[in-house]
Length: 404
Image 1 (cartoon, rainbow, N blue to C red):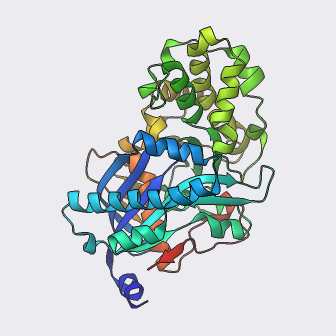
Image 2: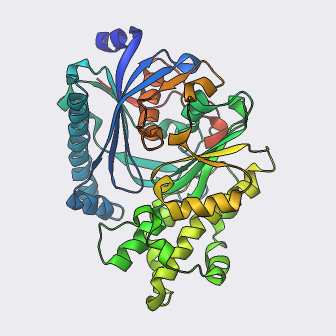
Image 3: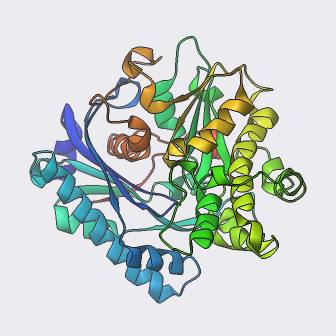
């Protein structure tokens, strides 16, 4: 406990944030310097890298989505070792000893998530054993951030809105922070924290990736930059009759979703009922569906609440030029900007919180890993890290479990 107290009292901490998302591409690792907490948070991003999973590890993760208890038990420790190795590598590459690192915040890899809006007991499971990370690195680790929010009546997601508000709220503009990972999620920043609206829009890259794999007959294939999607024609009839009728799109926030709803089973069902000779058209259609589902959620749930001045996109989907083109067309005349292109972020923020990053790094890819570094810092300082208006929790709670 003395070690925890000593780190908590430091003015500036060296913190690593880890994120492994629904796309199962690899582990995002961000090395940050953090001073203060809450509205006084000052973040400097020193290094960021995505450590891709070997195909064998990807296969094990995917098998665990419908696997045995033994599969999950083993993978929990396998991923813990991979996460620890990522921490050791990024510290070394940035010129630090791992002993210089004060704290690690890890989201883990979601294996199953049951939000309140689907049948079942509201619950969630992320793996990547924190004890293994602590043992391998010698660092204090904060993990399992979502569980306490669920215990307080929330959906356990999204958790990024707290960071979005700290770092990107603007004194004059209403911003929508749109992340497109495996699942797409949005945070509307109207000004005050209690007015934040945030939720999962629907699928992000997940369905696109699954259909790309089928077309390319390659389990490692993805639609790089949306080039494959651009070769097909959009099937507007199928879009309207089959895709835009999905019941999740009509559920009002707070809400969250995941692979259980829009994963491989959903994609394979689409393929099964589509003309196998025209799968490029199906790919083009689900790419547009991702954009339409995002736009539809704004029309239903955000535009009636506020006049959105700009939309700032991040995540892997921000690299999909076909998808981004659809978003710009649908939202016109509202500007759709890349987070990596938003200059002087620290000069724009409403609160005293600031973010500094090396020029050209593209914070859009690092945002979620940085977020869990910041959330870990909030946890050890006894600060709540959820936004009840986003998750549906009954009250703010301190997130995570601490492994010393």
